[in-house]
Length: 115
Image (cartoon, rainbow, N blue to C red; front, side, top):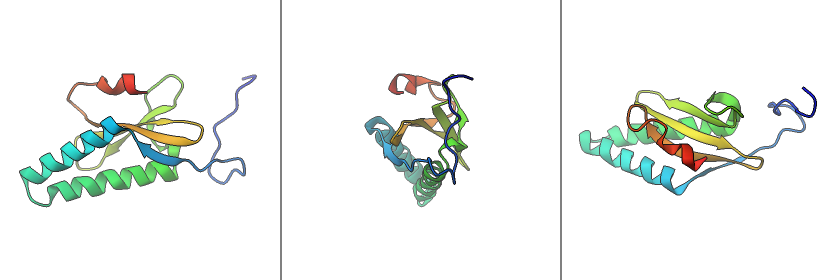
């Protein structure tokens, strides 16, 4: 396609390392979910915290790992293993922004206005 380039891949000398930043709403959702899980069973909040942290680390290391959610393929999601949650993020030129820590069956798509 004229005028468009393939995304930079790991190992490509033009690749950009992007920092990960969590939006305030995403951070609030994450904290509330950790608290809720911890109330359900001591230690479960920690398990959820670790699962989300591992997902975020995966996103930082391999930004294109997530399933695209937008036509431009810049809004993506990664599922959180063992929990009914997804990490929704947006690829930007210099950073990766976590826009939601969203439950899979509550208010689908509510986070779309954040991208």
